[in-house]
Length: 337
Figure 1 (cartoon, one colour):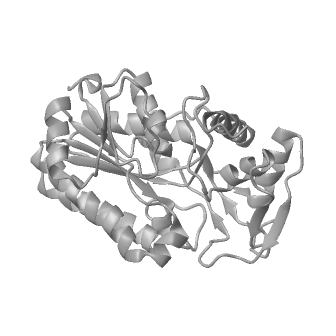
Figure 2 (figure 1 turned 30 degrees about the horizontal axis):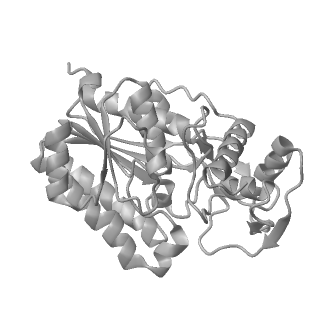
């Protein structure tokens, strides 16, 4: 069997939030890794100095061919893409171009370059507004926005490609990713981020005046939306284990939810931020956003049965503490303090 440590991995979007954590997880596991990122939303400082960084576009097939040759790439972890749901509704063609058309170009280059393993950053948005919660991988896929459709289309392309060519894949459907590297090496750095925990720690540090609570009349215990929050480092660890699984069984492809199977409401998250920071965040009760499900919780049975995945940070206060630690460091990095 091929030694996973000997297969160099190209991480697309490796200067971004989740991608940079995957780079660290690969490095920490002793893997060879390179990054391609156009730095439109990623940050050069998020990529370790000893990791080759190619600044460019994932649809640039000449550049990809050069990277594959120079680095001996045998696997791809694909994080590059646009991720803001409301923006996808306003700019659908941009999302289909950036997330779907460019993924197709990347896949074509991978097939031509003899890359055998492909891990894809998918999303729970493929489920739309599910009628059941928790959701399994077999829950009907009915996206309600171009972002979710753009990801589901790429999942379909991967399935068809794996049927036709000697490349296997794993699509990991993320739930709500939060937190930051416990060692403070990287974190969520995007300005104007919309993720609740990121927004809440910004408010706790005085970078925002308040936090909007979108919807207080959902059919949930406290009326606010319930979500499954997963620590970004646990998610990154799942990617490394998924790669091992693809290498171990090269004819097998996988689709798995990435979450803890436990939900927290918006108010519970804000209470936890208050608890961790020992202060009170200003909350502004606002109307629901279109398409927000009352509850979106993963059933992680499949990933737990398939991979030896043991989450290390499955605790809401820990997730918040790491996000807060990174937010303070980001203030220093940007000279905002």
